[in-house]
Amino acid sequence: MQSIKIVLILFMSLGFLQAQFSKSLEISSYYDDNLFRSVQAEQDVLTDFMLGLSYQPEKSNIKFNYSGDFFLYQNNDLRDFSVHEIGLSYSLPYSKNSNDMLYFGLDYTLRVNGDDYSYYDYDQLYAFASLHLDLDFMFLTTGYNYRHRSYSNLPELTNDRHYIFTRLNKSFESKTTIILEADLGQKSFSGQEIYSTTTMDDGSGWRGGRNSSSKMTAVNSEDQQVRLNQAVLLARVSQSLHEKVGLYVQYRRQFSFTNETSYINADGYYQDEELFDDPFSYESEGYASQLTWVLPWTMKMQLAGALVSKDYISERAYISAQDSTGSGAVRNDDRSTLNFNITKTWFIKKPWIESLHFNLHYNYIRSESNSYWYDYRNNIFGAGIQWNF
Image 1 (spheres, one colour):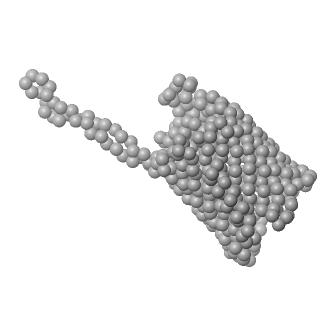
Image 2 (image 1 turned 90 degrees about the vertical axis):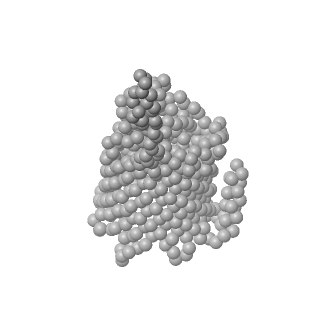
Image 3 (image 1 turned 135 degrees about the horizontal axis):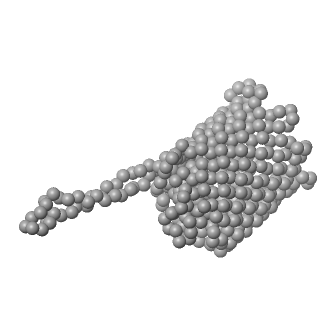
């Protein structure tokens, strides 16, 4: 709580700075009936205090950003943690067409947990560059991003990630938009020490009618680096159904170029999807759709759903709670989700506040798996309010 007070004092003091600063403060809270996404459900209420700051000098294409999230658990306060991100982005028009742009960015992220869960701490560096090109008949976006994430207390999970992507966007007079995207990615872990023992005979043989040879044991170690490679293909069709109603449907396919790996996902969900379910550890095929309806009184409603099938590369399924070795077949999950979100914005435009934003949401997750610990249901009800200054 002390860190939250310090951030609030900083936030209030920034109100006296130049107008180029934009500031936001958000408080959201939600009830989660399966906090750790497990067969053995545990309930809790989480609250997230979020501070956002951005600054862009006049007549400049550089923008600086900071965001800080402070997550507080009602029943598991030892798990409280914060995430801080600071970064900059730069946009550069490179032709007479104002839609032709180059984008660059650099972000640094730090996650801080309490002493009992400090092994989840990490710091991360993320950099990206992309080219946005208006070809008259369509838009082309291509780029590259790099991420290095370091877990100081789990060095075997420290990793580097590379992505290159190309996206085509084509709109028609019928108010239909088609998006096609292809990605290539690689994730490599820094490696872990693998120990093996070798027993050797000293060659002395039989002496005096008994075996007098001695045994020597050598310990060998090697650094086995894990590399995971994948490709992603995505197709999305968006359609305006009415002046204020839009719908999209999407197909996504993820392929792995890695046939076998020793990487195993963490066995307990902890507000970090990557540790719990690394996207590089499986192949998948999925369908998604979302309906957006712009309502009167500056309100908006969104209803979305998705069906995803995941085939894991080499992770074995646990057939029961007593299975400690993963004696089943290779893990396979079928995941369905349903999301409902409604928002309301008030534009106040006072010297001390610009707008007030309220949201109410519900998320449902159903995971059907041949692995005992990943067969679960999850309901999340939440609400939040954001002040923009």
